[in-house]
Amino acid sequence: MLLIYVPKLTNRLGYTINVVMRDILQTEFAITTDADTLVHHPEAKLCYAPQPIASVDAIFLKSTHLLFETMIGEQECRYFDFNGTPAIFPVFHKDSALPFDPLAAIFYMLSRYEEYLPHRKDQHGRILITETLAYKNGFHLTPVVERWALMIKDLILEHYPETVFLKRNFSFEPTIDIDSAYCYLHKGWFRTCMGILRDGIHRRDPAEVKHRIRVLKKKEEDPYDTFDYIINLNKQYRFPLIFFALLGDYSLHDKPISYLNNEFRQLLQHIGDHSKVGIHGSYDSAMEPKRLEQEIQRLAEILHRPIYRNRYHFLRFTLPRGYSNLEKQGITQDYSMGFADQPGFRNGSCSTLPFFHLSRNQEINLNIHPFVAMDTTFHTHMNLSPDEAIKLYHTLIDEVKAVDGTFSCIFHNQNLCEDFGWEGWRAVYEEVLQYAYQHTQYTNTTTKDNLEND
Image 1 (cartoon, rainbow, N blue to C red):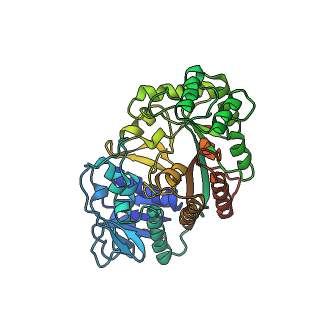
Image 2: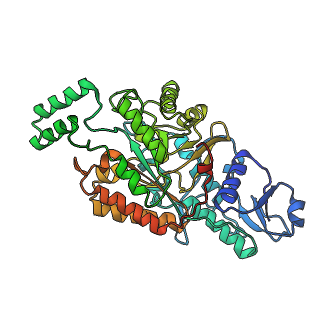
Image 3: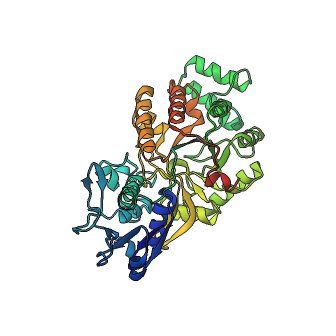
């Protein structure tokens, strides 16, 4: 068993060691603040401190001050390249096994420390990716948390080759956001009439107008109703498919089907019979806890089960408020950690890990499922063709596979309609599933998230 010596055990340090050793590297370990205990330990030893302990043959990692603090303030986390891997929090000690503090670096990324500091936001109040340390230094497309953890693993195995680490397998987690379940159907007479009026004002293509009328007459399928396609396709791969349903009230940024509509309710129940379903917290829900509570209750009432999963619409939330609100509502799994306008690893990770609440200086009961890419990012923000998108998806999947993490991505039911400028994107979705499947050592082992809350 690995014994880790630290001069003082703080909440930040305990959280980080647990995440690295328990969740990512999956090895047996213990922590001590007693130097004599480390001296007499007969197995693997690691010393994380400002200075090594004299006459102790242990791996020494020089610590910076971050994990021994409780305050929040500007940090000296200068970026540099170490053997082809990004590194931050450099240290200077001839005996340190690494020239940077990997535990401080991991904590800084996972806690989203920089999002607690002053930064520029976009028009929706979200952090701009250009404001992040990772983007500024070109490592936002790298799961650095896992890479740093694997560096520690390599050091341990180099010094103590008998140390046992459980094998992690690459996994794939496709998610579907339901911003609007239907393009034409079930929108009520007012929205339907306004849609027909807009067709006339904007002189829409007659074929498009005719299509709308035929859908309203139930002579053709609604173009956004791609749910059976998604569910049936997933049956080939048996990935842990998750849908997120928007049940907020109609507003400038939220335009869902009414949660009172019987057809929509039946659709959600049908989806719930084949996959997991979470709430897609509306545009204002991260700022208004009562609104979030109401939307969660709506979905729970429709599905007749508790709701434990969330993704905020527009990915609109701020830290720590957005996550504090989820915790209060009993949400234990959040899928909002990512960027809207660029792909990337917002918290530097591709693993499901607990969240550390910096303001309260403690870990909270909320697991973060970071996503790497979203269809609207590639199509709308980056203006990529389907072929270009496929190549980028392949690159990102390869990055995650290299560290045996979880590749999570977002698609939308409405964007798989093969219409309205989304021609060719079903092929993208199908290729992503196929490519991920080729990389997946799929077993029937149930993950922690599968065991919980279903």
